[in-house]
Length: 404
Ligand code: NCD
Image 1 (cartoon, rainbow, N blue to C red):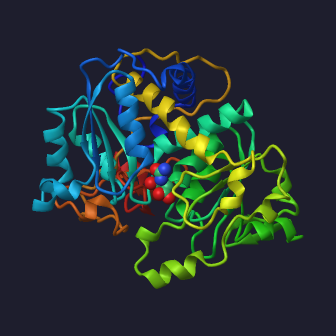
Image 2: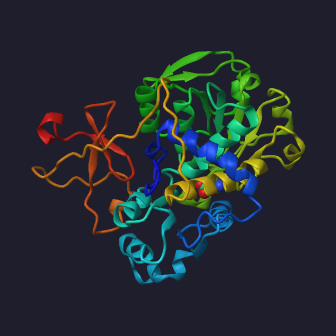
Image 3: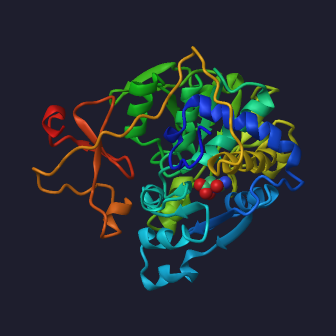
């Protein structure tokens, strides 16, 4: 029962082997995706959504019902006591007395961690602002495994809004952990945040090539540039080597103004012409919804797997719910191959110091007043500490030894 009672707030909460065990169970669940199992008899799932959703909420609810459990649903938290000022902590402490597992989506970064800290039932993060979306990563990796037969050592491009896209923040690490070579393609200003690049490089040895458009990837003859201390690589004809191209929309809701959004998304779309230069067996993926970054003409291309990708969300979420509720044991295989395993967080003790706020204004600690800022040591860099909720980093105000 390795996963019973656990939370899934970050892709770092599960080891590589646990992720693979969920996938093995999802393979089994796939046969029942149109039926009704008795696995979750008597159990209730509560969804708690403060942001719009189609796939994530409905596939969680369908998954619970296919397992034989019930659902109580908050599709719009604005219609609950949240509108009267109720906090995340109090809301989940109420819901836990009605439901056995909570799935939360919220615009603030670190909000799902708060829910998990306060709720005694398992909490699943269905997207916390621009931070993470770990169950999307599970279904993205599962899609690759199903469609390619393996998710190891692949060559994958992540394209689009890498700054605010929470799916790619979780997925970049999921891919790196399974040995992928990754390329980041984003419009100027929407690049992958530096602290995530540093963690990818220092903790997982993954240094993605970066460029501004897939067109650059194809035509730019320069192979390597150094910029700002980070590797910038633009390899010729890379497009023809990708096993998968994962496209995301520009996250309109994270921009200050319509003008800033329009400027950021200009000139960025995947066309049939561009894809004619990709491998015949490449996957074109997208977490959906798409806006105008994926041509409708692409839908006919057998390489376009985004609708199947969304469908894989059902067996994945059935497997996850069955495992967290302890209704099905999963087999976590031992392996001599390297395996990322979650470690207990080592918190920095700031008692001797003035309280330091998290520098990220979209962090939950800056919005919910009962929360104290908390920081943890950064494994790969002794000079930094990271917010325990949103993971934004600041220079460490204490020496490691001093704070322990
Ligand atoms: C994504 C999300 O909500 O982050 N959607 C999803 O869950 N499938 C991607 C997006 O909204 O762009």
